[in-house]
Length: 90
Image 1 (spheres, one colour):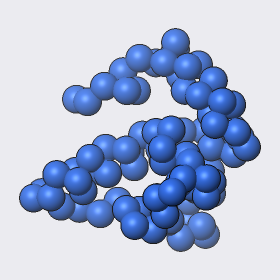
Image 2 (cartoon, helix red, strand yellow):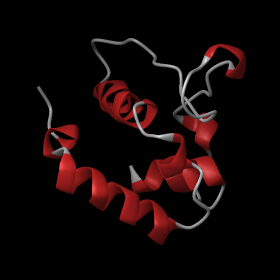
Image 3 (cartoon, helix red, strand yellow):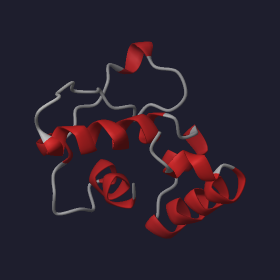
Image 4 (cartoon, one colour):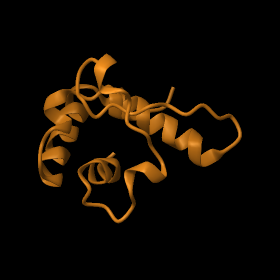
């Protein structure tokens, strides 16, 4: 999640568009940084990406619109203290 935050903010060496695509901003609820899910049953990298996209898209606007990595980490800590299953796979 932290690396995805860095990619969205442009502070990672990995470009966002190499793994993810932003959703059309006109139809999203919540924050404006929602990502499209790519469906694949074969590619492990894409399966990992889907799990990250689900969690990322469920974050609050407040969490994704912070400007620093440390602020984002604090938001993740708040989520973990209230909703531990957010970080667990079904």
